[in-house]
Structure formats: structure tokens, C-alpha cells
Image (tube, rainbow, N blue to C red):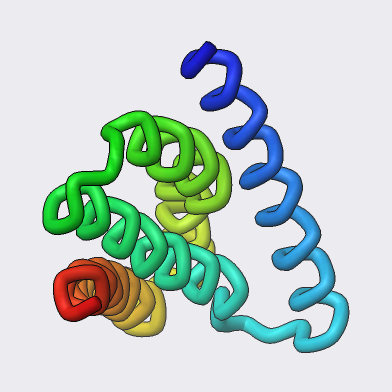
Length: 118
């Protein structure tokens, strides 16, 4: 049953990523790939919370599989982030890559801390 839930959650995450990215790009077309950055950071925050709930509060690891691997795996996108880095190019591309890494790792750490403190 868990593999089927991971598939469904992954599909939902992918559709949400598409909707958020598309709506953001239509509203704020810009050279800097902000929508993908926001998606990756918020997904990292969520996976941090989920991992923290499993690690610190004894929730079933099935939550980690379904929400973390499934939903967050479908919602976040490393490959699109890399493509945006290359397309942006130069110093802006390097800045984007660094902000994505620092922002995503920081958001995950915040998510773990939030789950630990609850």
C-alpha cells in the first residue's frame, strides 16, 4: 500500500509544482528563477518537518516515505534548478545556485528544529 501512496503523493507534488511555477511565471516573469527557488526551499522545509516528526516524535517512517519521498520528491526539483542555473548563467547563475543550496539546507534545518520543538 505504501508504494501506491508514494506514487499518488508524488503525482500531487508534481502537479502542485507545475501550478505554482506556472502561476508565478505568468505573474512575475523575471530573469531570476524565483519560483523554482521558492518551491525547493518550501519543499525542503516540509521534508525537514516530516523527518523531525519521524525522528523526534516516533511517527511511522511511512510518513517519511509518502510525504518526503513521494510528495516532496515530486514537488521539489533538482533538475529544473540546475537547468535554471545554467540558463541564468554567469554570476547570477552562480548566485542562484548558492542561494538555492543555502536556502534549501537552511529550510530543512529549520523544519527539523520546528518538529523537535513541538
